[in-house]
Image (cartoon, rainbow, N blue to C red; front, side, top):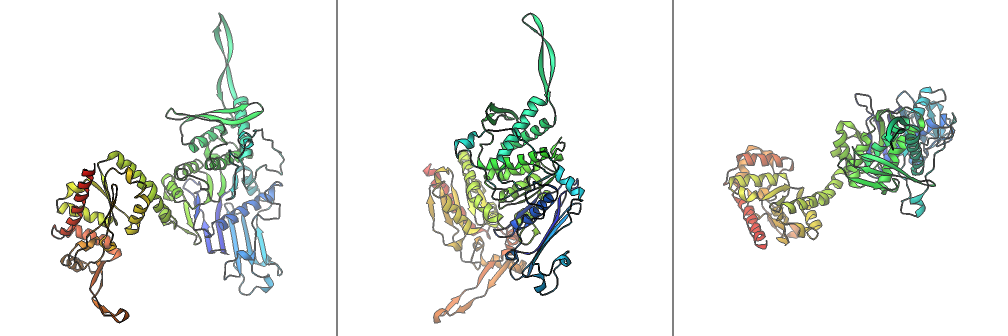
Length: 607
């Protein structure tokens, strides 16, 4: 049983959203990733899905997370969208199971207007202001079978494990064997996973014991020893359900620890003081010993909780396991990137999600790195990215928080990585300019003015405008200048009025302004004659403010004619200039090469 659709109307920030889940050609569900700013409604969508799962669970099991006839999610008029008089939520699963609810701002008898589009409106009593409806009952054998044989888990945003360093007990807590109730009306399986670590420890000890003690297979071999032939028992293999599951656990742990393809040797400690540890033999021959698998970092422990909870729940279901494709169901994770380092967001978490192709993951995140990682591992059609509160399916690059967060990481990670690379190379400087078109024009000018040998000493990198150059300077002028062994030049446009500044091998320069009708940008280096030729070719290239008179505070001021390259036409103008401009048209670019020559001369002298 998978989620097929969720519809939410007039709830919190959400006006009207319907999310229809998608499936691959082989029938496996695509992960659904919910994104949006704080307060966009991600947790609201998740709460409706979890409430529906809790409702289904409570119908069949006495030990469900909520009592039968109760609900997991609160209904209240305070959640009705401002300006609306009601809210509606509906969750549908494959197979036809449905859970729906309505909340009115008043009792039904006082409700004014047309009845809302709620399928059970006639069942709402006149004195009621809310209603809950489901078609799941004890006769829903397909739902019952799905809950028994599938994985249905929710990891809330307030999930938490005590850190191993908190006290000695947390680090050395005794592992025990797990005991199940084994009644038909109980499942021994919780939907909501707040802090599953202790249960996972006990279960894993069970698994290791069964695999190595119960499922071991031996054979007898005659061996010549001390002048006699004696029979010795030799371990042949370990086979059985526990061994299969333990192999899956090892795949998860190896992926988590960044050693896929390696092997694991388990260690459970001494009697009366059990600890699950391991020795990891990496694929490259490296060895790592972990005395307590459950004393990892907070981020690692969080991922261990999540993915071993899935395998533990599968084991408790009693279903046969032969491969990860046997693991089916729904796993909901609010803030899936909780406590995760950037590398875990980009590499580890997407790799772990890929291990479970038949699980439907529904998760919220603020992490652009996770989205980039999913895009790399699953590709854009391998998961659904839903932007809230609109409910639109978007591409990774359209994620509203993507540009801000990724740009900030570029300022630090990519810049410092480039510094280390260039420090090793030592022979190549970087010329940072305000955009890709600036870089293209400078390269073309070097060809026409025969300055290519000079420019070859630099990587020309276009960035997003003056403000980005400022960020680079402010963030790194003090921190990195000692590590830069070749010139790094931040070249601003002429209209920024930046003064020449130098810190070590980090330089700040501005393009010298020329007399031209084009007043801003590197295009100021083209004269009026060339600009008029370009305008004759395509008038859309320019926005023009004609010469006019202003009277600020009664003072007459003559404003000259000003041309600017239209923002949407900037690349087209650049390409036209590169294809049609002559050496004479590009002659003023010589000032840039003179500046580069001066700086490289200074750098050579200082070295």
